[in-house]
Image (cartoon, rainbow, N blue to C red; front, side):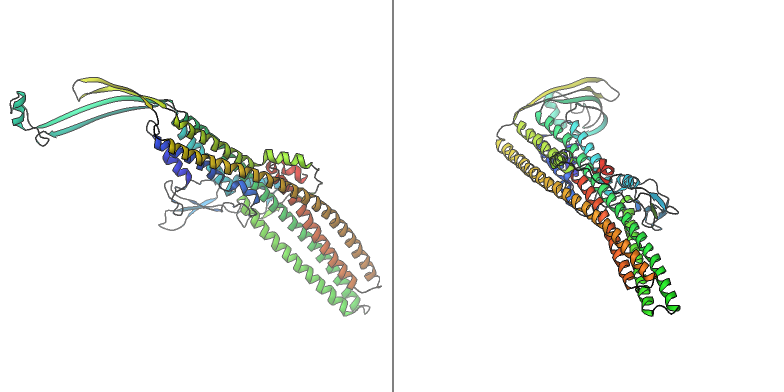
Length: 530
């Protein structure tokens, strides 16, 4: 059973007040809610796996249907822009809505991809639903602080057997009543209408429980922001990977075109009797090598496109036209102390733990103030009488003062549990701050090194291009065979591939730095130099 269900079962009572045993459960549930709200997400930035996205095949089950795996009602109705519906089977009763691919290629920029990922990625949708669920639970806790008023009315008919209840006709003579005065079978019709109200006048435990529950909403809100940051990083990285694949395809196509020209020249020279067949064979082998590289690059791009579609909720077969070019810009260096301060202020996983600590502190106060007396008041007023007869007013007014006696052992035990939770959270916060420091330092070094690698890779491409041009001139002039040309083309292909890889790595490290400082969602464009 999930923590939220436990929390609901203990907090959403429809009666007047929470009894003391239930209130003790609420103390534990609020603490558990704060822990479960983070549920490992405080360490999500260290997870290398990409966030999941919803499938393009969405089951539209009836409102009261139940997920057999989890045993809880399904409430995921995230997608509305779906093309058509089809039945899964003749008698299944389950309808599937399938989002179809748009005709032609869909233009997609980096901003569009990230915006779509934030709207349709499953992790974001689940985190938003968790936040909504917790806010609903807070209303249940808030109910415990409000006056509870009820109006009730009833009418009933009773038929009593007085003889069966021990009232014999002979026993009525002792009261001076003749045995035959009334029958032993009596019918009674009564009607009542009442209005009742109750209010807790003083109970600090309920107040701090509500304060803890409100802070738990901050926990899930920070988890939502943390999830959104992970989606921005994942979608941005996948989009950059697809751009790198496009660059690899363009380079491979250019080399194939150049190799076709070299093969043509070698064939003409051989046919004219001034060249050898070995030059033709070399040129053909090199051309086929580049054709293989082109096929691999196209296959990689197709698979990365599928992965990008998956992240942003598009069908796998949807064709894309990436409208952005590969970004490249030097990142303005931020001092380490400033970057670390920004991370401590903006990292959602750290803010989540901090909010959890405050939840635990408020829950501990709720446990502490259970030692104090609690004062409550309840009353009711109405009428009661025989149906179709006379009615008379009835009322009750009652004040209750509860003073805990001989419960110190339980109070101390609950205080120890709350204190242990606080200590654990404080240690996690200290550990995470050290981790953040290490992540920021490592990300800065990665950005600096990858920037240098891009500069070297660009220089290598320029040198390899010049070397290829010189060797082609020598081959065209008949000074040398085409072996140097083949070698120069291979060197240029390797240099271009390394340039594409280093540019992708540079942009990826900048996104990682933005993620590690907690600003990836709001400042990814600035970090990428767009």
